[in-house]
Every structure is written in C-alpha cells, then in structure tokens.
Image (cartoon, rainbow, N blue to C red; front, side, top):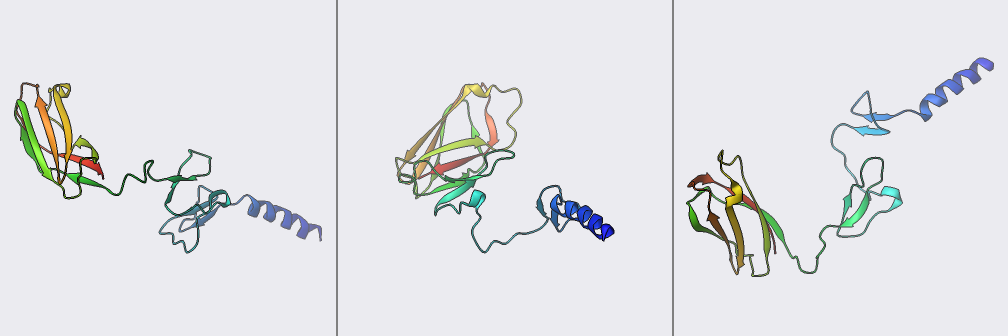
Length: 161
C-alpha cells in the first residue's frame, strides 16, 4: 500500500507541473501546438469572449491579451488598403506622380515608405514629399534638392478612406 501511495504522489506531481505538446515532444509552454489550430467557439482570454469588430491585442509578456478597437475613428474610416507605385524617376527640382484610385476622396489620408534600398550617399532629408488626396486620385509631390536625379524608385503607401 505504501509503495502505491509513493508511486501516486510522484506521478501526480509530474502531471500537475507538466506541459502539453501537440505535434511536439518537448513543449516549452503550458500548451504548445505545432501546426494549424482550428477554433469552433470563442477565444476567451480571462473568460472574455470580446464583441463584434474587436481585435485581440497583446499586453506584453506574461499578461493576458485584451480585446481592442481595430481603428480609433471607425465612423470616419470606411476602408483601407496597401498599394505600390510603379518604378519611376525623380529628377532634381519639383516633380509629381499621379496615381488613380477610385476610392480616394479629398478626406482620405495615406502614409508612404520607399521600397528597397535608396541610392547611397544621398541626403534624403533633401527630398521632400507631400501627398495630396483628390477625388479619384492621389498626387505625390516631390521636391528633390539632393543634387541627383534619382532613378528606378518605388514606394508603397497605406491609404485610409
């Protein structure tokens, strides 16, 4: 009887402090899944199923995630998207690039970033970009004071409508 009791105590403590692995034999967390996970019900951090239109936001290590609003100004933002320009050249001085976008209206906004590496030894503080939203199009204005004609550039932009 004592042998059984000792055996149970040893094994129960192992089960209590065990980690579960699905698709792995060496889990590093309480539950580690290697592969796809399918949910048929709610994801409920701290027993909170969230509400429609919310996204799950991390609160950092060792903290449960919380449900948050996806966009701060939901009533004004009806759509958003990421786009790319074609490659183009930016001569010294002023130039502009017009991109047609049927969703663009004068209250639309966007942010842009250059794709890939930029030319070496160019002070990009001397390349000023202004973005103008018009109905049906974006106009990207460039003031190039670098002293160089910049060739084969491309940018991506994220637009909010």
